[in-house]
Each structure stands twice: as C-alpha cells, then as structure tokens.
Image (cartoon, rainbow, N blue to C red; front, side, top):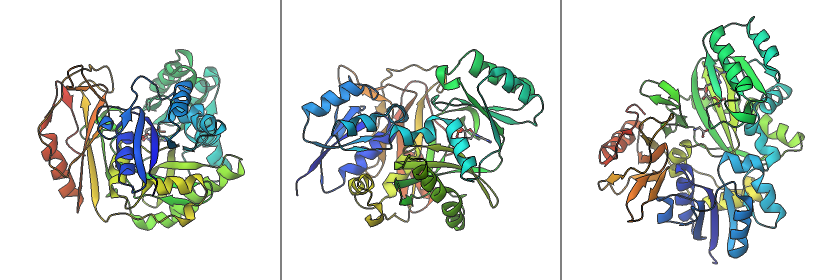
Length: 419
Ligand code: AMP
Ligand code: GLY
C-alpha cells in the first residue's frame, strides 16, 4: 500500500490529537504541520515560520511537497477565511468546510437567523447593527441576558450580563469601543439559558452526519466554574450528565435539520460540525455551532475512536460517509489542561517545563509549547499541555490524569482540580 503524507494546519492540542490519531492509520505516511508545536514536532515535520492564515505560504509549501495527499484544516480562522476553498481551487485535496459553510461559526448573526429559519431550537434573540438600537432594546428586557459579538473573538466575545448596566457596558465595549474589532460590527442579544452544557461533535459529508461520543468542556478558568471564560481548561468524553436517550431527538430536531438546512442554503457542510448544546431536563437548545473539532474536546474524543481517521476524512471529502465504519471504545477519556498563570488574561511564556516521566499510557497533547535553542521544552501559550488519560470509567481516568499532572511543573503553572 502506498502511504499517504498529510499536512495539518494548526498548532494546538487539538491538532496534536488529530496528528496522533492520524498517525495510527495504516495508510498514513509522513505528517507535516503548519505551524505545529514542540509536541507535534515529535511525530510531524513542523513549520513554525508559516502561520495558519498565511495562504500563500501554505500554497508554496504544498507546491514544494507534491507528495502531500491531503491538508487537514483544523482552526477556526483559516476555515472562516476560506483556506479550504483556496486549496481546492488550486488543485489540492483539503479536509474542512468551505468558507460558505464555516459561516455557521464565523457569524453568530447568520447562525441564529439560520436556526430560526429552520426551526432549530435556540435561545430567543435579536440582532443589532447600531449601538443605539441595542441600548434601547435592553431597557425593556429581563436579566440575565447574553450579549455576543457576531464574529470570531477567541471565545471571548460572549458576555453574560446580570444587570442593565452590565449589558450597556457590553454593547458599548463591543460596538463603540470595538473590543473585538470588526467581529463586533453586529451583535446578538439573547435570552440566558439554564441547564448543563454538552458538546456533540459530528462527522458530516454534506448529507450524511454521524455524531461522535458526547463530551464535556470546562470553559471557566477556576474550580467550581468560577473565573473568566477560557478556550477550555479540560474535558472528558463521554459526558456523564448527558442522557443518551435524548440523542435520537437531538438528531431529528437539531443535527439533521442543520445539515439539510445548510445544503438547502447552498452551503453544504463537509467536515466536523460541533454542536454546543444546553440541556435542561427534556429541553435541548443550541448555544453555538463550531465548524471544526473543539479544543480540548478533541483531545478527549479522538482517543476513544477505533479505526482509521484518514479513512473517515477521505469518505467525508468524497461524500461517502455513509460507507464509513465509525466505532468507539466503551471507555472514558479525560484531559486536564495545564495553563500559564494569568491565562485567559495576560500571562508570560518561555518558562522551562519539567516533565517527570509520565506513565506510558498517558497522552500528553501539547497546546502551547516550543523548543528553546538548547532543545529545552518551553511554554509558548496560554494553554500549555493537556494531560490525557483513558480508563474504564470517569473516576479512574480522572485519578490517572491527575496523578500525572503532579509530575509536570513550570513557573506559575495553573490548572483546574475538578475536571
Ligand atoms: P458561545 O461561544 O456562544 O458558545 O458562548 C460561550 C459560552 O457562553 C457557552 O459555552 C456558555 O457557557 C455561555 N453562553 C452562551 N450563550 C448562552 C446563553 N444564551 N445562556 C447561557 N449561557 C450562554
Ligand atoms: N472548547 C470549545 C471550542 O473549541 O470552541
């Protein structure tokens, strides 16, 4: 069998998990990653000098490496900017949604109006393009309310407002002070939902859609869901709270109508579609869509996938997902994120990381790391390492992960103790 070389775009823990999983496939040859990180560099040739949004740099790299069979685009920014479109137009095989389909994530105004049009349950909302209208509207609403910037804002564009004055501050911050730049030209103001959150990621080829095991992210920085929203401080799969008997209804009322609706809109979705759900008893609503694998959900989901990830990616690109065999281990996987002190606000990088022999069966997915000139492992981001363990149940996975967290340290290391 000729082995297939793959290029992965991105440089975080999610991309490390994707690279690690792809590498297990029998047909996978050499891996490349742009920009990658120090962990990914152990299994892939990385190009830290090319950014994930440098389309010309990526095209040039592919022209110099004609052996590359497929490019997997993982992060939100290059997807929203149309990297998959550009690669395909230039004759390269690319995995991920087009820009037209990725709009489900890159515009909350689009996604909310889309859900309304197709009867997909979501929080009641209004959209605004003028701050005066938004300020006027909030005078008459009940609190809490949620104010959201329309565009991509590193997961920070969602503000939960307890009072009118919080909401006024949020509207001014996003629309007048332009805290998130162009992402705040338009906003969504919506009802606050109660319940628990579950992430359902799904493989989708534009017509067929296959959900992965459920997962549970921990978005707040501090124990007990306190502190600021982050990119995610840890995750496990499957979610313990999630009642699996809800899945057929979620398929019927949310997942299938989303895929059919996008096709009807002329924006067929091929890739991984992420449903952020809020569940309150029998009531399930969509909080958000992402047009990609979640981070750190992916680190807790992919270790449970049996079989060949490249085969699934191939079948998605070719519209043959219905033929794919997608099976899951009946186990639990838990990932604890080690972060830089201060994250998600200001933090320092370049701290040496001491890793004292993690157990052999621990997966150490690197999020923000690099090698120093002397080869030392250094911190290079807000989220640094995801210590990941697979076990028969949640308690065992948790115990195993935290036993290994204790063997890793760097200056001002911070992590949640309650994943
Ligand atoms: P989003 O990027 O839209 O998922 O929002 C980020 C986080 O904010 C979600 O994961 C929720 O924890 C919270 N959130 C967003 N919208 C709402 C809502 N309508 N009600 C309650 N919490 C929300
Ligand atoms: N963990 C949430 C996200 O990937 O957006």
